Length: 381
Image 1 (cartoon, rainbow, N blue to C red):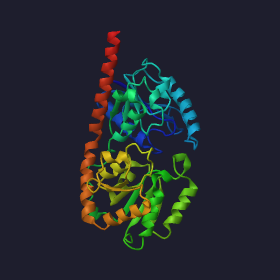
Image 2: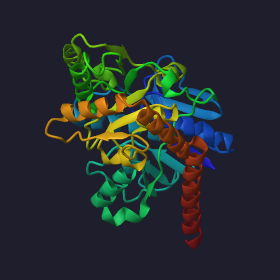
Image 3: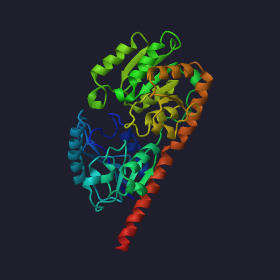
Image 4: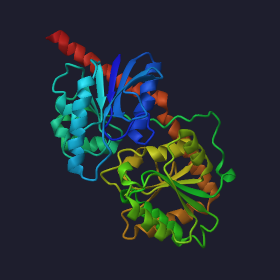
């Protein structure tokens, strides 16, 4: 099967600047090739990457993209420019996967292949314009419901296939929590919508009591060009931290180093407030796959794989005082190693359901169903 994957205008592949979608499809593309398929991946060009190269059998084509702007309207303009460039080099394929806003609209026919829209974020009105797409694929049940509410007539084209848990570079089992340092960890964009300020404030309030032996690590970019909240937000976080043991490391793009960080922490905290932003929760799933206990906010997308006090912990981010809600949960779980370890073990087992081979199987089965339908349409004509 010939598979084309067109990623967005703002982050490159390989994912040297991060990005959950970029990381996922970079990994899936290589897995598809290992299964014998012909895969082309189109992504943003960077000076250090050639415009054409082959990595692990995947053909990479790159076109000039952009740094993400602050203006949503301007972002859509830049996405259009990038999508037009990508369309020019798009090869004839059996299926065309894309998460760009404009490409499903620009590919008005199936002349180059059926369009498979990967809905990486909550829809914002565009789904009703994707009537020519063969599939609208959501990574979670919550996003699938949002798509069907927005475009009821396309409900039969909506499918749910999750992200795969990032594959570990090593084969050894995770270290038990009892052998790890007392580290709480956040990995993601350092932005207000991620609720990082709630975490820092909740930790700082207990820094001299229950959290006295703990350290909080905040890993991720704060620069606006990388999706962070900017210098003022970072300065505010440091002010909230005060004298507490809070370390702001910046982003860790090296996968081996990131894995080492995840495997050395006891508790991974992801207090996102992005009600219409989070579509799945790849960061918590990755932490689970490395044996971390995870604590997340009560967003619907996390419920696909996190049950409170079973495979993870959930706090009420919609409470009147969300900092107090988070702090209470942190105090409860950090003081109970048996509870923390049991939930971490259950989360680790749950993450196995999201292995790369299992998720690749689901995508390939869905691609095949689309190509069979396309062949049937051509035959009936």
